[in-house]
Length: 97
Image 1 (cartoon, rainbow, N blue to C red):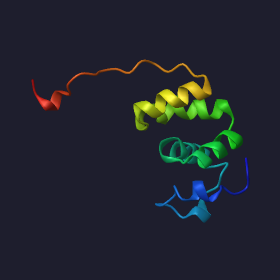
Image 2: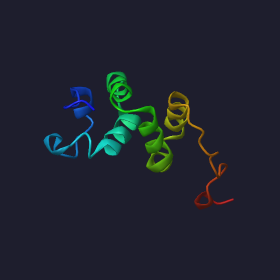
Image 3: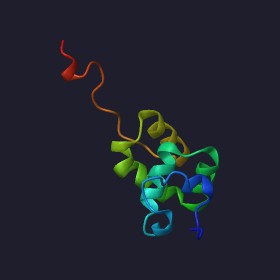
């Protein structure tokens, strides 16, 4: 992985000190941020920096719970990953009949 993320990625780290982020140690955190909110430049950095297998692992792990359905579908396509079908659908229980 690259030594320092570009400004397009650092911009996504608004709630942490970017100097304290270690790319190797915090790879899943960085991938999740870029997958959810990254610009095109940040996404290009992600593809160049992280392997397809690593991106797929994040997608199938925490990504399935935190990413929007549109992002899950896109990430599954670009990583050539089979994702389980979404459960539920229809009107949420809290909304009443």
